[in-house]
Image 1 (cartoon, rainbow, N blue to C red):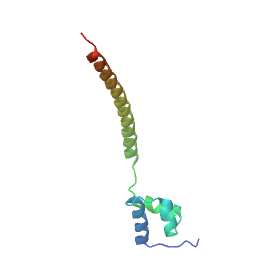
Image 2 (spheres, one colour):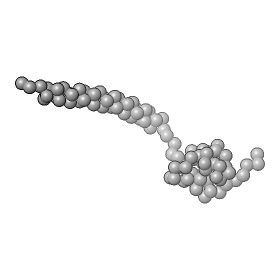
Image 3 (cartoon, rainbow, N blue to C red):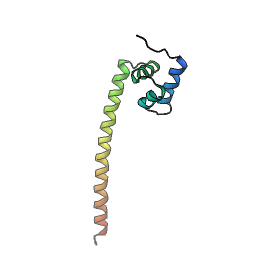
Image 4 (spheres, one colour):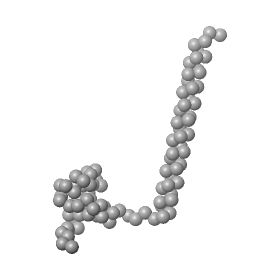
Length: 94
């Protein structure tokens, strides 16, 4: 293995380009002449590990978000129906 060694500062700057500036891994890889695999390893090294408990909490939170989105959609549809009914009855003479 004749892998090239990069300084910690170099790795940090590459990761900052992706995380803070929103550059893609592909772009940074091409610009710096580093493999995408290496950059992904550097990113993973600076991210905090996700515990199993946190992972389960995220899944539960996503389920709740989906449930609430569905409920919101249904409520909006009901509101729209009531608006149409109110306009209809408001336009009818007594």
